[in-house]
Image (cartoon, rainbow, N blue to C red; front, side, top):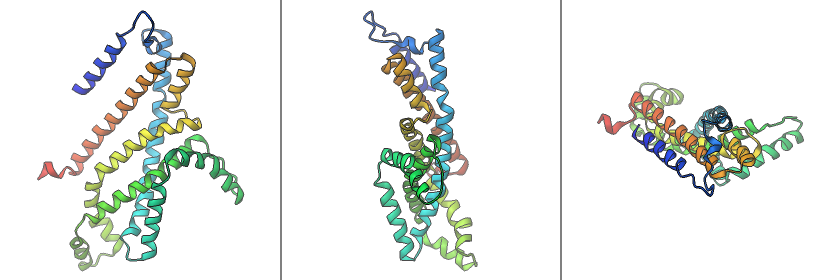
Length: 256
């Protein structure tokens, strides 16, 4: 609450800095005026698209990351090679070029093999974010799983558990407590990187801010509010993650 209060004080301090020369133009987001309130509602309306986009991309990333991470624990060299190639290749591609490739190039490739599929801005952003983040998620899974002592696996084998049962009932429940914080950081990363979806026309927070800037010509004030929107969203996610950590007992230092 103290940090939120500081943020509001900072905002109102900036709001009070209007000068006779018109350096500031906070009237564009002044809720006491009809135009300002309309602009605020338009900007806040991007929350839904940003949150939905981020949640779907995060779930896909978690699933893909797990599928990619499991071969890294295999004794099969080909499976390990697949993991290394995928992780290194995907991590090497910047997000924006990948977004352009998925949105503009992937439909062309699909059409060339007889699949007539149009990818809109929403799903183009989801596919890009999920694939880009899955390489990092895979490494988080790998580190979390390998942090569990081998004695746990050997004990599971002695009582007759197969590989799937060992992962399902022994390894993953323990690893989940350790990988939850870094996975939460990756979700925050996805939320922030969703701003890139604005360049392909996705009506999320950043796109809406850009549209108001074009009509109002007040970038400082609009982008300041945009920063506060992302800040509030990230703080809410952080509070939610801390709550889950306490519920799952992942805060081992507090419990020791």
